[in-house]
Image (tube, rainbow, N blue to C red; front, side, top):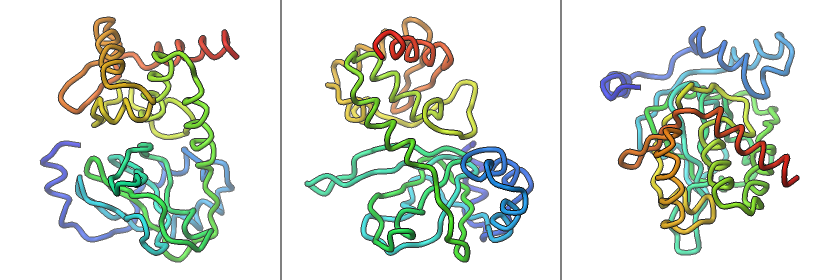
Length: 235
């Protein structure tokens, strides 16, 4: 989304979900696997809220609130380290849901959620009986960290963050994300030097494009193939 678009949307009040937003949610994620009647019941309770980039959607320790689905932009999920600093864990893209765990467990929020780009989300306050299939992502994070080859592990993390691994979300042909090399190193359990070397090699092969605090996957399907081949060979 362009910066001008984000600026124009910041002051808009919550509104009913648009047709394109509803179709996105009908065709991706857990909702796509339910009956049309159930989909209609859920979507009828939704409203679209616009959240500017950089704004915290909710903080660790906040009380349970609405279940949300991303329909535009993307958000970062962060845990808090012992020194109180947020550490990036995952990125959620259009078609993915968040916020159910605190409601189902009746406990305060365990993660910080921040809008990385200008975000549109559908929030449901009256319909909380939703089971979200984010467990696959959680298992995938642990599985990726068990990959011994550092380059493959780094690729797996990049693919997860851009929606090409462990998730059913809206995918871009050449996804671009705001991500520092330090954050990527943390997520892949690598040193910054090792991460930088891997990224430079990928850029030299014209598979990614590196810019200031941003990474763009130019040929994600090739990267997917590399990771899958490694998993077949070392499974």
